[in-house]
Every structure is written in structure tokens, then in C-alpha cells.
Amino acid sequence: MKPVKIIRAEAFDLMQYFYGSAHDPLIHCRIRFSSHLDEAALKRAVTLSQQAVPLLRCRFNAAARRPRWEECGFSEADIVRVSEGNDADAERLLASTIDIAREPQLKLFLIRGESADTLCAMIN
Image (cartoon, rainbow, N blue to C red; front, top):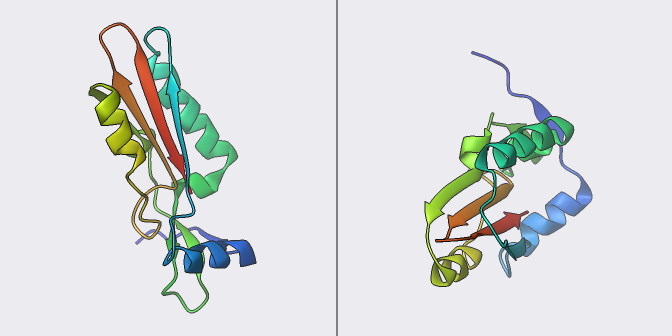
């Protein structure tokens, strides 16, 4: 069994975790483009971001003796989701949340429109 890579939780991580019972401490963003986005380039950017910020591959383990971030090997396929859709789909996705104990800390939804794309992003 491969050992789990651990990143120590900071005081602010714990504060955000406890605030989660009152509200989701997430940043939500919607970006409308004037044309289609290069899906491969977006996924490559996520991979490079994960190399620079390993926390993007982690889940939060509050049940550990000392709460911590544990690397789960989330890939760009876990973070970037592509679908056909419209503004109503974007609104629905922006209202969703992140389960920090099970999901990546970043979610990107690329919504393919007829002539242009919309990117909905959420980060913990």
C-alpha cells in the first residue's frame, strides 16, 4: 500500500472547516467567452497548477488525530467536467458545493454553447 502524502492543516483551514456548518467557504465564478475554449489546454493548465499547488490534489481529513490534507491523486479529469448546456445549467452548477472530505478543492465546469463556452469555477 502506497503511503498517503500529508500536508499539515493551518489554523485558517480549521476555521474554514468549522465555518462550513454555517456556510460554504467557497469562491464561485462564471466566465463567459466569446468563442470556444481549448479543452486540452484547460486540462493541461489544471495539471500544471496541481504541480505548483499540491493541495489541489488533496481532500481534508478532519477525523485524523490532527486534521490534515491528504493527497488523493485527483487528476484533471476529476476537476474539469465538460458538457453541452446553457445559462440555466451554469446557474445550477454555480449553486453546487464541494465536499472537502471527498472531492478536489477545485471544480471547473466547461459548458459548451452553440457558438461560445462558459466556464464555471469553484474553489475551496
